[in-house]
Length: 399
Ligand SMILES: C[S@@+](CC[C@H](N)C(=O)[O-])C[C@H]1O[C@@H](n2cnc3c(N)ncnc32)[C@H](O)[C@@H]1O
Image (cartoon, protein in one colour):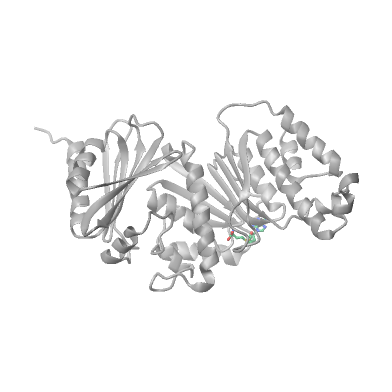
C-alpha cells in the first residue's frame, strides 16, 4: 500500500506544532493562502496565550476589513488544523524557538514540507508568552532586527532616544497591513516591494519582517538609496541577521528601472524624489503606493497669490504651507486620475515628527472616467499659476 504523502506531511506538521506548544516553544503559526468559503478571510495567525493560568491558542482571523480573535484548546486547534490544512489553507508556517517549518500545497494539492533551524530566535519561551499576553501587536519588540538597528537594547527594551522611531514603525506597519488586507496581494506567490530613499531602512526591515516572518509570505524587498554607505550598512545588517528576500541597491530613484512592483513605498524621500517614486509605482501598476513626502521645493517659487488669498499668502509661512498642500494635493489627484483610490492623512501625530503626512493609494479594480479629475487639476494649476508639477510632467511624458 502506498502511503498518502499529503496526510503524512500534514500529520508530521501538526505533531511538530503540538510538540512546540507543549514544550512552551511555539512562537506563532500562520495559516495563509485561504481558499475556503468565508468571504473576505485572508489568513489566521495563531499564538499561545496564557489565560487565567490555562494555556490556550489564540486564533486571530484576519478579514479584509476587520480582525476577530478566538481562543481555543490544543485539542480543538489540532482538529481544526486537520480539517483545514490542504483544504481551506494551502500554506502554514510555524515558528518555534528552535524550528521554522513550512507546509505548502501546490495547486494540484501536492504537499511540500520544509523544516529548518530557527537561527534568529533569541526569545526565551517565558518571555515569548509574556509578549503574547499583550494585545496582538503589528510589531513585536523582541524582533532581532530592532536590536540590530539600535531600536531596542540587548534586553529587548526600547532605547529611549528611539521611541519616536519605534512609534513610527508601528504606525507604518499598521497602515500598510490594513492596506494589504484590502487587496488580493496575499494570494500572490511572491510579493515584490520597492522602498525608494530607504536610508537606514528601519521601515524597510520592519516591512520585510512583518510580511515574511509574521504573515509567512514569500517577500522580495528592494531598498533603493543614493548613499552607498547606507546601502552597505543595510546589506551588512541583512546578512548578519541571515535574512532572505531583502536587499539594498545604490541608485537614484530618477534613473532606477523598476519592474513588477506590487507595493511601492517612499518615506521621506526628499522633494521631487517622491514624484519619481510615485511615477515608478504607477508605471509598474503597483497595487499599493504609499509615501510620506518631505521638503516640498518645486511649487513654491511658481505660486502666484490669487486675489482673495494674497493677504494670507503674504506671510512666508503660509506660502510654504500652501505650496506643500498643493504639491501633495496634486499628487493625490494625479494618482486618482491614473486609476488609484487615494487618501491623504496624518500618518503619525505632530508631536512625534513634523514629517507626518501620508499619501496612500490603492489600485482601483474598476476603470473610471478621469476627465473630471484632470479638469480639477487644470483649474487648480491655473488658479495658482503653476507651470510645472514634477509628477504630472513624468506622467505626460509617458502618454
Ligand atoms: C529622510 S531619509 C528617509 C529614510 C527612510 N525612508 C525613513 O523614512 O526612515 C531620505 C533618504 O532618501 C535618500 N534619497 C534622497 N533622494 C533620493 C533619490 N533621488 N534616490 C534615492 N534615494 C534618495 C536620502 O539619501 C536619504 O537617505
